[in-house]
Length: 372
Image 1 (cartoon, rainbow, N blue to C red):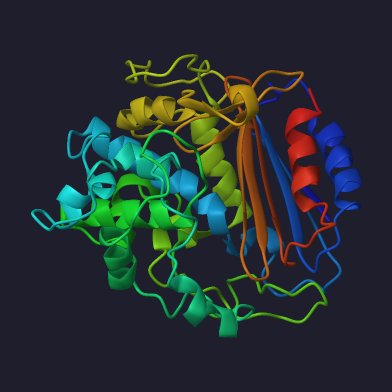
Image 2 (spheres, rainbow, N blue to C red):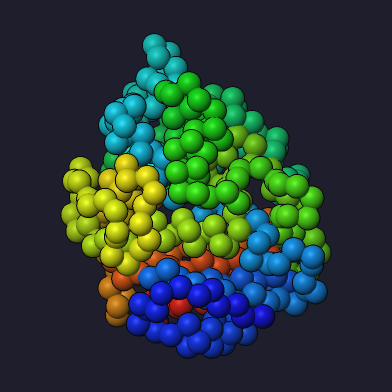
């Protein structure tokens, strides 16, 4: 089924053309439930499909597990708290989590910026995570590792590299960031995220816990067997967000407007009100943080060929830079991406576990990079 939502016709590509592109792209993805959603200057085109029979709730209104695609929400939250003066990027996490507690010198040097940008020197997950996770790897690997254990693992860690010197993707680090922000503000992570990000952007169908029966998409293994809803345990900030595809577009539309910031550094003021390529912000204080998370912040990889912002992967394309993040859970996948200043945003969700020959991310990435 393809649904086109009417909006002022300012997009360079017609909704009908976009609908055909989405229908063709969907043929490349095998999943029980699939949603491909595109916004062009506020004109939304949503394609839904999949091998399973549709349920009573339309696929685009179901909440999907984002997994690691939750991290852009953590990044925007941090940028907003910095803009408010409540924390600083260079604040040391250990000082906020456990002031005065002796820790390894390298741990003492880890800042909030290091945690968010995967440059803390921490591994992907704590070493003692695996013994409890392996016996239930395909059903509930995270649920038995609560928040206090994540914090203790951080405070006794021995980083593999000096903070700020190497990039290594780390769910552990972003989870520590979440607990640090909660400690610094005296506010639980879930409440903090709602107050600072979800409510100001009007994301009423986005949450970090399962919703009422029948409103959450059900993930599946590669063989099609259903899997239980994800319990992230103490790793909430790194992967707990659930959202409908329509809410994902709203989140991306907030990012897509305005010219792309081109150099690292403190975010300067942005015009408020109408924003080129995106809708008007109802909360103008979000403009600065949204600019900050779009700004190139570091380079990594062979000859430093890969660029990243505070929270988004940043790639070139024939139509200009693209910012994106993908995520996967035990039985679901998600992709979020946009082209700054062009009005184009892409959100995609699927309810099948990722596998080696999976085409989901490549298909969604192609919608972002291969179309005008």
